[in-house]
Figure 1: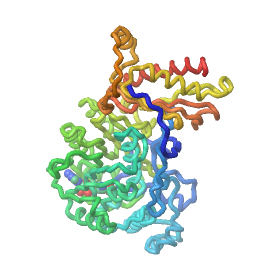
Figure 2 (figure 1 turned 135 degrees about the vertical axis):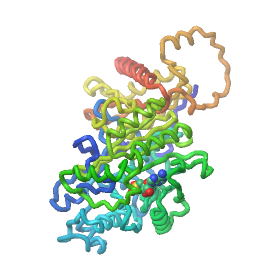
Figure 3 (figure 1 turned 30 degrees about the vertical axis):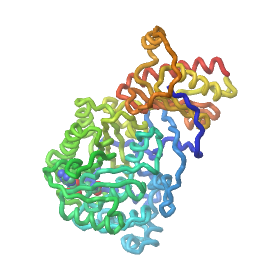
Length: 527
Ligand code: SAH
C-alpha cells in the first residue's frame, strides 16, 4: 500500500460545485415546439424584468451538495476568456441595447433600439451570429432554410460535457486539465457546426469529428469551420442515413472521449405539425429547421436507441455517450434500456432557457469512473427517483465550533487513521488541500475481510511498492475536508466523500458508513 503525503506544487482554489446555473421548476417536459427556440430570452430586454438565468443543473434535493475541490486555476487566456467566463455566460440576459450599438447588423434588427422580434427568422439568426461573435469570437454564416441554433442552449451542452469529462478523467483530478487532449464526435453537426465550434473555443486541446447526412448542411458546416480557421481540429465527415452513427471503425479511430447528438426530435412530419397545432400560443421563436433536421423515423427515442445499440458493441471505445432530448418521457424509456443492458454509470441533466424551454440530456459510460453529482444528477428534483443515477458524493457535517474549537486536525487524523488501517491498494493524502484519494480491490472494510486478513500469517518483506494499477480497482474514492462549506454554519467544517470509481453502489454506501463512524469516534477523542 502506498501512503504518501504530498505537497501541492501549485496553488489550488475551491470553486464549489462546477455548475452554478439555476433551475426552472415549471412543467415536466420541454414545452416549446422545436429544438430551435430562444424561448423567453430577450423578455428582460423588453420588460427589464429580473432575469431568469439561462441554464440548469440545480443541486440535488436529497443529498447536500458537496463542494468538490477544484484544480489549480489555469487562466487559459482566449482573448480574455477563461473557464470562469464561459461558465458564467448567460447567467444574466444579454443586453440587446448595447449589442445593437456594437454590431450595427444586429442593431438594424431591433425595434426601439432594444426589442427583438423572435418570430422573425432573420432577427433570430442575427442574434445567434451576434452572440457567437461577441461571447466566443466566432464568425458564422447560416443558410436561411436550416436550423438556427439558440446559443445558450448549445453552450449548456458543452458546459455539461466539460463537467462530465473533468470529473471522470483518468488522473482522477476532478478538475480541468489543460493538457488533456480530448476528441469528441458530434453526430448531426448541422449547418452551423455549433457544438464543435463552441467546444474548440473553450478548450484549446479539444478536437472534433462532426458528421451529417445532409449535403447542404455539410457544405455550410465546412465553410463555418474554415471561416474560424479550425480545420485542423474539426473534421467534417459525410455519412448516409444507414451508416453507423458512431463511425470509429470507418474512420480507423480506436477511442474517443465523447459522442454527442442533438437528434431530430419528431417521429413524423405529422407529429411535428400536430404538436405545433396543439400549442395554445404561437412558438416563442421562429424555427427555420428543414425536415431532415426535425424529423426521423421513431423520433429522438429511436435515434438514441440506435446509439445505445452501437455503444453496446463499442463499449469503452467512447468514454461518454451523450444525447440531448426534448422530452422527459424519452429519458425514462432510454434509462430503462440502459438498465436492461446492465449499464448503471449514467448521468442526467436539464438545460433551461428562460422560463419555458427545457431540454434533457442523458450520458452513459462503460468505464467505471463516476461523474460528480453536478454532472450526473443535474436534473435535481425534476427527475423521478427511478430515473436517477446512483449518488456519487455525500457530505458529512463536522462538529460545531462550540463543541470543538479546532476540529480540522481531529478530522484529518481520524480520516487518515481510518484510511491507513484499511487494506487499500493506494492512499494519498494532501495535507495542504486537506484532500485524499484512495483505491481498494473490494470491500476491505467488511468484518469478514478483516477477520480473514487477521488470520493470515504475515511475512513482511521490504520491497518496492507494487505497480499501482488503480484503474482496475473495484472501488475508488476521494475525501476532502472543507473548512467552510456554503451550506454549513461558518467555522463548521464538512467532509465530502466522493465515489470516484467502481461498479458497485453498495460499496460506496458501506464505505460511507465506515467513514462516518471513524469521524464520529475521531472527533470525540480529539488530538
Ligand atoms: N447539431 C446541430 C443540428 C441538429 S439537427 C444543432 O444542434 O443545432 C439534427 C441534425 O442531424 C441535422 O443536421 C440532420 O441532418 C442530422 N442527421 C439526421 N440523421 C443523421 C444521421 N443518421 N447521421 C448523422 N446526422 C444525421
